[in-house]
Length: 219
Image 1 (cartoon, rainbow, N blue to C red):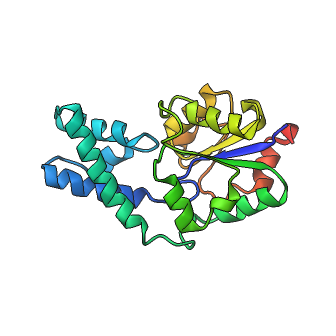
Image 2: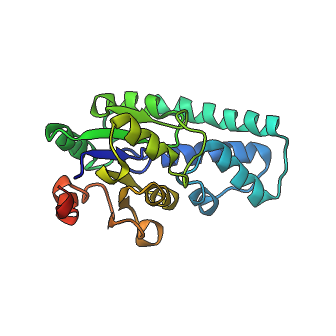
């Protein structure tokens, strides 16, 4: 039986992707590195430190660990400052409605995000009350595609993975859900999240009715 739902944040609850892109672009420009939308797509769903290493690899750059941490922190500062402009109007269409519906039906709900700024984003959205558990980039050491963040969330909810459905918009996120034995809902194009148990183009389509219809034997 499905008793819990675990949500990624960026690209599922809200779209901070453009803010991340702008922050990485600003840092890359300062460093004289090449950075474009194609490289940015490779950062979807992975941690800040993994992201900067992807950008460095793309540019054939090698730096010591202290410098890498310093640059990643600089990018984060740019990004965090941009979050001040977020409001509760910045939910992705359908996300707030789904969270509200899950609450009214008594399901357990957790966040399972690689972001270390998840709490700040949820506060800006005024969304913290929707979640029983918040798992973020500070909760586990291994980021997706390792299943650790989802396992952390389900454990804190007191549920087994097979009793939870994970919502993800990243290929590595679906990989993580599968590795942890969770049911999965992919949000986005076939080529990115087509390996999820069920896929929707947008959150607006991923209603509780649609999800229940697919997993009907589990409700």
